[in-house]
Image (cartoon, rainbow, N blue to C red; front, side, top):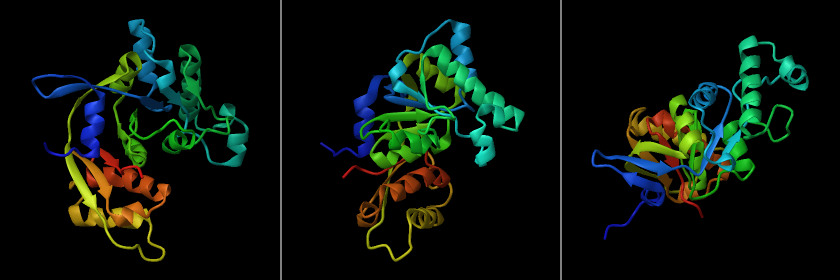
Length: 242
């Protein structure tokens, strides 16, 4: 019997049903929501008269339109000068309040970049399937999770069913051995990898990073590696737990 990769194992543990055409329904353990790709998804639920299938499997935080200037942040939503940004953040608050989804709002000290909030707050754990309406959701793969970005219609589908229609990807192992030199970070390593395989080198693949150099990296370094798997054309980047 052939051995299974980390991706194979996570896929097999989450498949609900596989069809003859190769499509599969997989269960999603965690969905992270933000203000840009969620409004249409919530509106779709309202129009269809549906409720989220599992409230506790979803977690929201505004991040893409949250200002970084102290004056704007301290003033809350009303302090956001850009009107489109302001209405997007306000809409996320309203939708989460309406449907009962936990949200780390602007004034919450846990609010932050969605791909940092998940791991930081323990919402991202090894063995999970994690999705978010953002391509860099692959970041969470640093925690041995199967994580990738999805589109707005898929955000709605996960809210309504806690499942997602997928086709299984190919496996691609990127093995980096040796000792990293002084000042060499995960970003340096992944940029070199992209330089070697090209920006389309990971197309259609779940990219797993392995080897002694990866194992010696901090979690932040591994998160950067997985985050930038997208820049190599992969949809998924991951590192096995240790």
